[in-house]
Image (cartoon, rainbow, N blue to C red; front, side, top):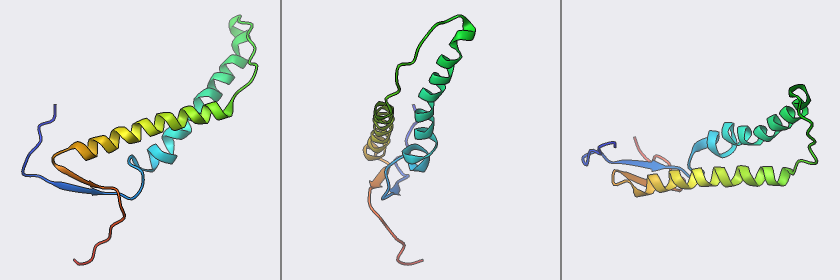
Length: 100
């Protein structure tokens, strides 16, 4: 367990969804979407392993729904972590510096 220093306080200000680009619309969603495609490729090559299988269809709406559920759960976990820390003030809003 990480020990928190009660003297340190930080603010996290982010108007975007928690997790950043990689989690919300970059690397991670792409990999979640590509995984079923890899399985399709494996099924197509199953004959080489002595397996007689047939892929009847791929449901892209279900693939996308799975991706969204996984990403949403991760974002909620990050949001909860940021919001529940005594050392972090989390502001889900735009911000700007007004002075040096």
